[in-house]
Length: 302
Image (cartoon, rainbow, N blue to C red; front, side):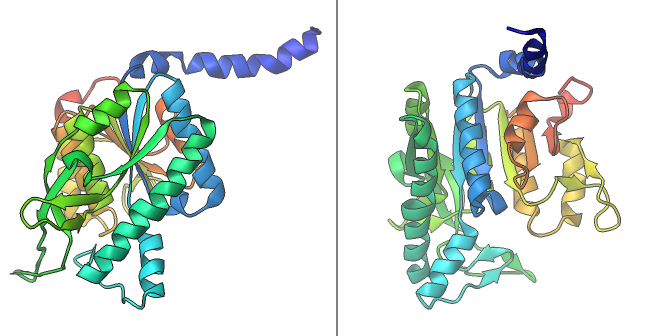
């Protein structure tokens, strides 16, 4: 090999070696990834996401993917002549709408993601919260102007059973979970917020990390006056900020808060519009989103 060729290959080796401390730290650890936003509808970002998840798997981590499907559900409801209505930031889900939600999440979004992951080997297995009692919920009634409002088949998670997911992970598979829950009390199913579902699963699995893909760079310091992203904050610091956040960020940040208060080491909101953002966040010093840590982790190395 000529000296020139040696030099051109060297940066690649250096990049791989840089990842070594992170590979060591995360080896064998479970990471729950909430797939959503632009990464879910842009073909290139979707393909890059699937490669990232497979990379994590081959690097010795145990990824679990949780997804919703807001844009796809809206489009399908439209095709069925059902009007999309939101109250308190949640989709009003009638019985008819629930049939469509279930069909889109389990039959379209999940299938596509499983297919992308399985281009790289017999890895991904799709399930919904209904399977093996993975997610159980009761009817969620948000409070608007001091009154409880009925928004249909929208669920509040009451219980998580990780048995099926843990069996798949032990078998070397990548579980892909649709955010639908079985009902605790009436034999129906519920539409549950995918951010909330991912956080609940991360806590129940004792995951090392929860990662939530979004369409923003992270949590902004002083939006809209500044686009400076807060790179790290503790659970208590986040709790103080929650009342000021935009409605779209609330379930994501509440999910991060729930996760780190219930045993997850770090929760991160990252920009899903950046290709390979997951790898950048997990394997480099230059994390690109907002990381939430438990209060007692303040001062520790992230």
